[in-house]
Length: 130
Image 1: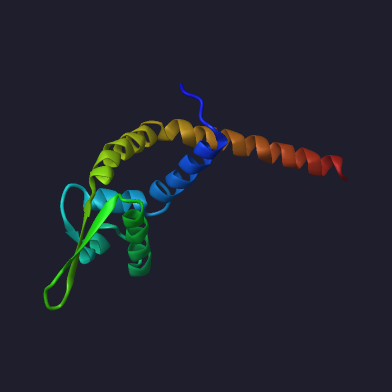
Image 2 (image 1 turned 90 degrees about the vertical axis):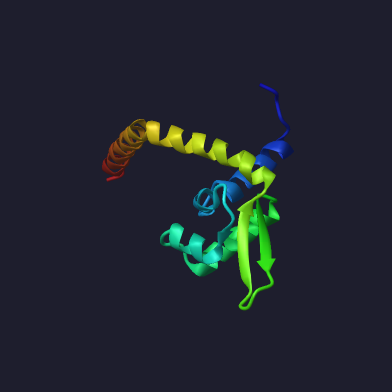
């Protein structure tokens, strides 16, 4: 594996926070291979507010993953579709999602074990501090 600089690592971390964090994965998946209207995305991505959907779409558009098209209709209609870059990212995100689902039980078990150790450690330190 090629060694990367700290600057590269920071860039990757920042990009992953923007693209994989928050609502972005759900919005990208909802767009999929089709051109989608805002109202469709709002229905498809349950529990997202209009404001958060608009913000997420702006971030994805800014990063070149989503293309926005304004249709000269009355009223004006706006559609979104994945760019070439976004289409390349989608299968990678699906792989990460599949990995997470496949390993859910292992991750939950690790969290439970960690929390148990933390609880015992805290109890021991409280007892020692009396």
